Amino acid sequence: MIVSALPSPPEERRLALVPSAIERLTKLGHEVRLPLGYGSPLRLRDEDLAAAGATMVSAQDARASADIALVVTPPAPEALVGLKPGTFVVGFLDPFFSLPTVRALVDGRLRGMCVELMPRSTYAQKMDALSSQASLAGYVAVVLAAQRIDKVLPMMSTPAGTIAPARVFVLGVGVAGLQAIATAKRLGARVDAYDTRSVVAEQVRSLGARFVEFDLGIEEGETEQGYAQALTDEQLERQRSQMAKVVAQSDVVITTAQVFGRPAPRILDAAAIGGMKPGSVVVDLAASTGGNVEGSVAGSEVVTDRGVHILGLHPLPASVARDASAMYAANLTFLIEHAWDDGVLKDAAEDDVVGAVLLTDDGTVRHEAVRDRMEANA
Ligand code: NAD
Image (cartoon, rainbow, N blue to C red; front, side, top):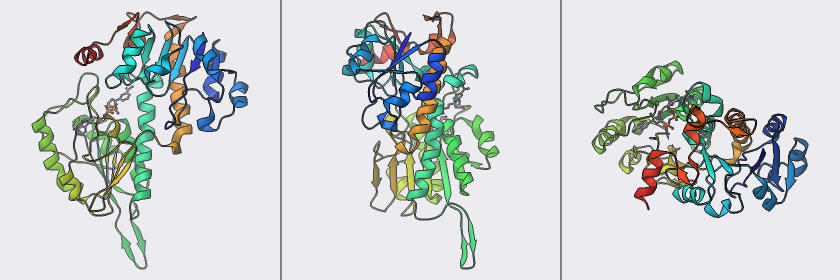
């Protein structure tokens, strides 16, 4: 099959294919055709991509010949023009919030394979792009906070006195939250963490952090797929009021709370941020899906009147684009390796992975919740 990739938008430095993935795909018998200049966001030259086995062609040829077109972010409808019907568009498609993209896939009879819908099974882990990118986001959040804050993270004993460790509060302990806790601990901070899924308490403690208990009147807080249950407005209000004291004591708050398929819950309001010390830092990893933090702006830094820095992390910063691209490209390559046998896609009714990620096929949306969302927005 001919595997290509659509260029990423200018603000996005990640690529869907890097030399190691190109080598793997060509070894598997695929032909990789990329538009000239594809590697420029990572300063990879056409020669570097060609040396790995890619054929560098015009953007128009890359589109017209692709059987599989890889993407990093949901392509705008106009970015899909020129792909032939039946082409697989594979990558982050953000199906609940990028409805025009889903509609364009349907109208163009393109087959969207949406990596956000990957099953959270042990087998699928190597194809799980949400996890690979979330890990990096958790790390980046702490590094950014450490740069912004006006104190050090570790405890330091000096002849002039002892500096207390910074207090970091991580809200939401999924993949990103666990990496944020581990990174903050490595830098010597004192870390508290909270998640509505009480099952994560043990994981938090095993990283040397404290799991903070709040009573929101929920049992496990987890769906069968391992995702968080959405809270009611009343439960969210209970959470906000019980958290205020921990937030006020924290020098850094990192929020990662997401509820699959819904806007992120608003868990930190202006009153809680108003209680933080001047110079404190809040990093909102959910900024692009509605934001956990009142006043956060995706891709920007806002400083409140009292000098609290609110960073809306989006997209993943250029500082980790190389590792993020390598992991993402590996995830997609493993997916291609899994999903096709000799150029034939596995039966979606038989294969768990294909059945889950195949979003659009034959001019229809296969995922019920996405279909409902589209009908509601028609
Ligand atoms: P996510 O990105 O959907 O959400 C991040 C975290 O926010 C979750 O832990 C969630 O419980 C939490 N959250 C939601 N609402 C909250 C609120 N109001 N307050 C505080 N926290 C809130 O999560 P994720 O990183 O995708 O992970 C979800 C689960 O899936 C985790 O248990 C993770 O370990 C598991 N997982 C399994 C696999 C696998 O087995 N292949 C892969 C990835 C993740």
